[in-house]
Image (cartoon, rainbow, N blue to C red; front, side):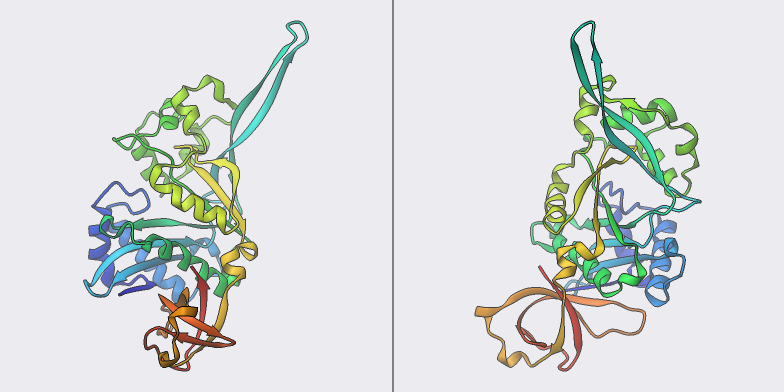
Length: 332
């Protein structure tokens, strides 16, 4: 059985183990950073700051049978401020035509952009390799939309997601080798880690003029706006619920940025609320697979995936839950 919940201090060892299994960009094997993320999340769940950029919500999927962290996902209430802008490369097109030669070309371009009043970002989805192929990643992803739909006042109108592009076996990015390394003179992983705490170097050293894609290598051009093999299911899921490609990519690796208006995300639009009834009347023939909230202490968030029957404002679960509890849920 699995439980979706807000992160706790006691999860540190499990998160450290998870971060050490692979080169997860979203979950760096840095104890200090992990502690800071846990503390920030606990503050955000208990008492969100009026400064949205300070609010980070860290969700974990716990395997209750093995007492093990199976995965994580996150929400950053505002990604992009005056002090730490949200950077991206905007894709564009530029037409060139010669009357003399009677021929022309349409060039793809990349231009550095920044946002000082950024959107809410969903990200940080990491699933333990042992649990892949069991549709648990979908639960980790969708639980964030349940929370967003329950507390829209704590988030921006636009929801933003940055998807990972293809990397080579050494974790290198073709676009980084073509652009980033030439202007910053450091490895991709080094620049990525530095950007977590300080983004000044991006604005100071990255080119502000248009970059013509035709001047890049074929590998670099092919990586722009593409997702890695393991990210394809995430891309399809986002598109299915209302996200669209924003014609923006990560300035380091070229991974695509997807956006949607919070109120237009189908998972949130189709949310439901109701009261838990006895499981004795549950019928598997008319069941819906959902994620619903569970009773929790103040400042804590608990949810689970379960099959239920929906009858008006009554929710009949497949297994025993606290009768009379008023829950919120989403379909999966």
